[in-house]
Amino acid sequence: MNDLQASAPRHPNLKAALRQARSGGAVPSPCVGVCRMDAASGYCLGCWRTLDEIAHWSAASADEQWACWGRIEGRIEGRMDGRAQACPLP
Image 1 (cartoon, helix red, strand yellow):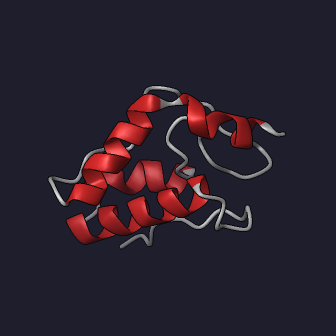
Image 2 (cartoon, rainbow, N blue to C red):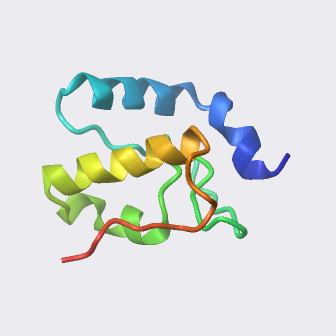
Image 3 (cartoon, one colour):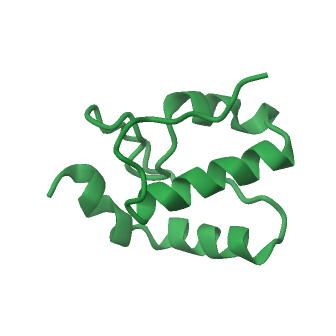
């Protein structure tokens, strides 16, 4: 098991934010204050975003933020193949 696999069930704040995101409320930030990048995947071990997604978050539209959440959810659930897929930049 690598760091990325081990981190998913251990961040309850990310799970709570994901539940809020799924409920359709205001777009919450995925940041949980655990800022450590996994070199193999390119994802933050706290929020599961790429560096580009993290950098673009505050300038992203709500639709872009929801799309980013969709990618995070897929990463957590293991649907991604491990390659970093960033939010599109304007």
